[in-house]
Image (cartoon, rainbow, N blue to C red; front, side, top):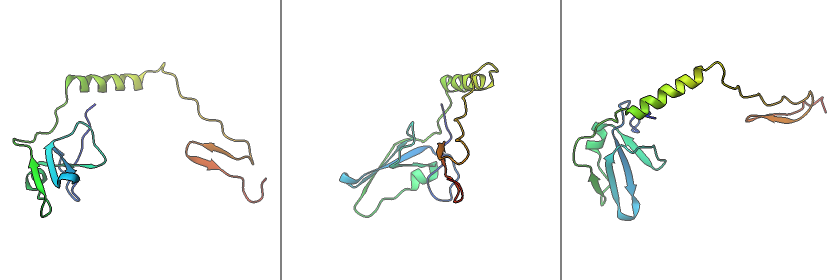
Length: 122
Protein backbone atom coordinates (compact mmCIF):
# COMPACT_ATOMS: atom_id res chain seq x y z
CA UNK A 1 0.00 0.00 0.00
CA UNK A 2 1.23 3.49 -0.78
CA UNK A 3 2.66 5.41 2.15
CA UNK A 4 3.55 9.09 2.25
CA UNK A 5 7.24 9.65 2.84
CA UNK A 6 8.80 13.02 3.55
CA UNK A 7 12.21 14.41 2.67
CA UNK A 8 14.93 13.23 5.07
CA UNK A 9 16.64 16.62 5.22
CA UNK A 10 16.24 18.29 8.59
CA UNK A 11 13.46 20.87 8.61
CA UNK A 12 12.11 19.93 5.18
CA UNK A 13 8.48 18.84 5.07
CA UNK A 14 8.17 18.29 1.30
CA UNK A 15 7.14 14.94 -0.16
CA UNK A 16 9.98 12.60 -1.08
CA UNK A 17 10.39 11.86 -4.78
CA UNK A 18 13.95 10.48 -4.89
CA UNK A 19 16.22 8.17 -2.91
CA UNK A 20 19.86 8.88 -2.08
CA UNK A 21 22.20 5.95 -1.52
CA UNK A 22 25.94 6.07 -0.85
CA UNK A 23 28.31 3.53 -2.42
CA UNK A 24 31.23 3.93 -0.06
CA UNK A 25 33.52 1.51 -1.93
CA UNK A 26 33.28 3.70 -5.05
CA UNK A 27 33.01 7.08 -3.27
CA UNK A 28 29.73 7.66 -5.10
CA UNK A 29 26.39 9.18 -4.12
CA UNK A 30 23.50 7.82 -6.21
CA UNK A 31 20.26 9.82 -6.52
CA UNK A 32 17.50 7.88 -8.24
CA UNK A 33 13.73 7.53 -8.28
CA UNK A 34 12.03 6.97 -4.93
CA UNK A 35 12.61 3.42 -3.70
CA UNK A 36 9.50 1.31 -3.22
CA UNK A 37 10.33 0.88 0.48
CA UNK A 38 12.25 3.00 2.95
CA UNK A 39 15.67 1.48 3.61
CA UNK A 40 17.71 2.09 6.74
CA UNK A 41 20.87 3.21 4.90
CA UNK A 42 19.26 5.40 2.25
CA UNK A 43 17.69 8.84 2.39
CA UNK A 44 14.46 10.08 0.82
CA UNK A 45 14.72 13.50 -0.82
CA UNK A 46 12.26 16.06 -2.21
CA UNK A 47 12.72 17.44 -5.74
CA UNK A 48 14.73 20.48 -4.62
CA UNK A 49 17.16 18.53 -2.45
CA UNK A 50 17.53 15.75 -5.06
CA UNK A 51 18.62 18.30 -7.70
CA UNK A 52 20.85 20.41 -5.40
CA UNK A 53 22.69 17.55 -3.69
CA UNK A 54 26.47 17.84 -3.64
CA UNK A 55 28.94 15.18 -2.51
CA UNK A 56 32.11 15.49 -0.47
CA UNK A 57 35.34 16.41 -2.29
CA UNK A 58 36.60 13.41 -4.24
CA UNK A 59 33.16 11.81 -4.48
CA UNK A 60 31.05 11.49 -7.61
CA UNK A 61 27.30 12.11 -7.80
CA UNK A 62 25.32 9.86 -10.13
CA UNK A 63 21.91 11.42 -10.68
CA UNK A 64 18.81 10.10 -12.43
CA UNK A 65 18.34 11.93 -15.72
CA UNK A 66 14.76 13.11 -15.90
CA UNK A 67 12.09 14.50 -13.65
CA UNK A 68 11.42 13.01 -10.26
CA UNK A 69 7.72 12.45 -9.69
CA UNK A 70 5.86 11.53 -6.51
CA UNK A 71 4.48 7.99 -6.50
CA UNK A 72 0.88 7.70 -7.67
CA UNK A 73 -1.57 5.32 -6.02
CA UNK A 74 -2.44 2.34 -8.18
CA UNK A 75 -5.70 0.43 -8.36
CA UNK A 76 -4.05 -2.27 -6.20
CA UNK A 77 -3.23 0.30 -3.50
CA UNK A 78 -6.79 1.62 -3.45
CA UNK A 79 -8.26 -1.90 -3.41
CA UNK A 80 -6.01 -2.94 -0.50
CA UNK A 81 -7.02 0.18 1.44
CA UNK A 82 -10.72 -0.46 0.84
CA UNK A 83 -10.38 -4.10 1.94
CA UNK A 84 -8.50 -3.09 5.11
CA UNK A 85 -11.21 -0.56 6.03
CA UNK A 86 -13.95 -3.10 5.30
CA UNK A 87 -12.22 -5.75 7.47
CA UNK A 88 -11.71 -3.31 10.36
CA UNK A 89 -15.41 -2.39 10.29
CA UNK A 90 -16.76 -5.95 10.31
CA UNK A 91 -18.90 -6.61 13.39
CA UNK A 92 -18.35 -10.38 13.25
CA UNK A 93 -14.55 -10.33 13.19
CA UNK A 94 -12.90 -12.19 16.06
CA UNK A 95 -11.41 -10.03 18.78
CA UNK A 96 -7.94 -10.77 20.07
CA UNK A 97 -8.18 -11.98 23.67
CA UNK A 98 -6.27 -9.89 26.19
CA UNK A 99 -3.33 -11.62 27.85
CA UNK A 100 -4.10 -12.74 31.40
CA UNK A 101 -3.28 -10.32 34.19
CA UNK A 102 -1.02 -11.90 36.84
CA UNK A 103 -2.48 -12.61 40.26
CA UNK A 104 -1.99 -10.00 42.97
CA UNK A 105 1.58 -10.08 44.24
CA UNK A 106 2.84 -12.17 41.32
CA UNK A 107 5.38 -11.35 38.68
CA UNK A 108 4.48 -11.47 35.01
CA UNK A 109 4.61 -9.79 31.64
CA UNK A 110 1.91 -8.02 29.72
CA UNK A 111 3.02 -6.85 26.31
CA UNK A 112 6.26 -4.93 26.79
CA UNK A 113 5.49 -4.09 30.45
CA UNK A 114 6.60 -6.16 33.39
CA UNK A 115 4.62 -6.36 36.63
CA UNK A 116 6.86 -6.60 39.71
CA UNK A 117 5.73 -7.13 43.30
CA UNK A 118 6.02 -4.09 45.55
CA UNK A 119 8.56 -3.95 48.40
CA UNK A 120 5.94 -5.01 50.95
CA UNK A 121 4.57 -7.88 48.86
CA UNK A 122 6.08 -11.15 48.23
